[in-house]
Image 1 (cartoon, helix red, strand yellow):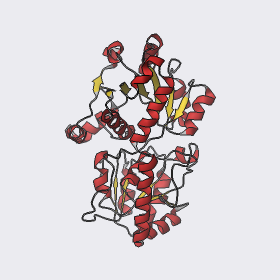
Image 2 (cartoon, rainbow, N blue to C red; image 1 turned 90 degrees about the vertical axis):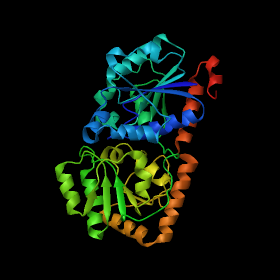
Image 3 (cartoon, rainbow, N blue to C red; image 1 turned 180 degrees about the horizontal axis):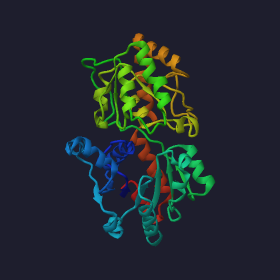
Image 4 (cartoon, rainbow, N blue to C red; image 1 turned 45 degrees about the horizontal axis):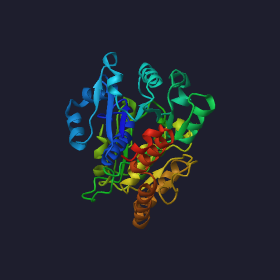
Length: 372
């Protein structure tokens, strides 16, 4: 079948985690023989910031890492939706798109019944910025793909959409897999962005302070670190290494012994059951992980077997020490976590779910094309 996707960016993952999942889903759809076309705006802020900091080389790096993936960069004022959506079976529109584009695609769907149209929500704005979400015109959409059941239920409860499904993020296991462990660069690595002051206190309690008190050799990758944060990292003895192309994360994980998960406050407090995609990716790489508190209300994982948990900074120190000093524990976590990803949380599983949703919605004459 023909799948059309409107996203913020496929080619850039600078402060843009949806690109991780999107690349895996597109790769899986293509591997199954489906046609995929991705549209992203010409002025996407993720691309603009990436090029401003690193030039065009990262875009060439993406093309080498994902030769099968391409996007069409468009200008909103010149986008011809009749042409873009010609022959489409399924259209996904991500919530980082402009409100006007979301409405335009919905209006097109109103007058063109040959495809099914879904809105894809992978952010916490439904609770932190509800006015922005209310402004999206979804009246002509067939439903919403929400990356957590609490968000799905909110769409249903407030009437933002007629139908909604839970569609969690997942790991692209073609890319995220255990690599041979060569020379070790240190003890702990964390890959994540500072995050608009949404977890500043938590990063200090569960990352900076344990590293400093334990005297660990640690490294952090990410973007949007303010000057004070960089000073705090230096004071904790943590090396800051800036932006990392996401597809290079497996090679970095292979040179360290443990990582951590520090959820942003909206997810820990108001949106239980939603981990960052980096949890899926780290576990897929066989990386032992220790997590700050979050409520796995949907039973995605098996805490204590897939990863360890810490209720406070002191427990984080204890759990990190346990992983670093008990090789059998570290190996057990690595193996169990990866088995869970392979059993339930790969992009292949999510494509199965997506195709099931399409089959549920598809016009009768098109249902046979799901597995075409």
